[in-house]
Image 1 (spheres, rainbow, N blue to C red):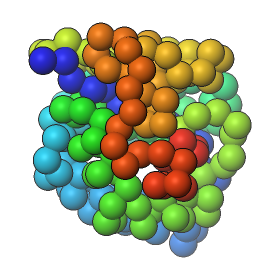
Image 2: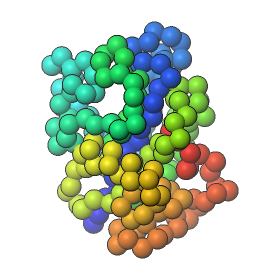
Image 3: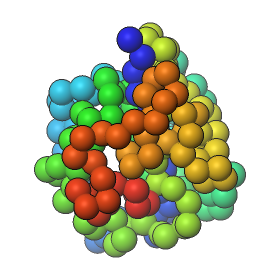
Length: 191
């Protein structure tokens, strides 16, 4: 059975190392959000560095194991050092779009979404992308970047899509019950 890959990417208004209150709020909420989402039915896995204790200073330096080398979209123009990196990215696997939607647009994550414009720049690029992978396949960061860029350039297609314009594993357009323009104001906005 295929699984749904999800890549999210956002450009933060200030570097991760910034001690300002908004940056701290973003970080402090992140751990709780990740814990909650990882327990959600339908969540399979998310990219995590294999060992942060080995001196990785940024996501770019970390060993992501089977998830591949960390990558970002070509349009990301901020830093890549511990002092200048200003991004938030996730890569995860789900059983399907409904469980992903339910996890993302409820509870702690939904509360964080209401604050996204406090933390993230408006870039004019999509903040997330989905695509189907075969059972047992692990998507890479580069897969996520190329799918996000494809979505930005060409719109939703079986290769790269959103909640509102989704596709079944066989490539046919599909509508997810309860996901539509009136059901959620955030579903196709930037992260």
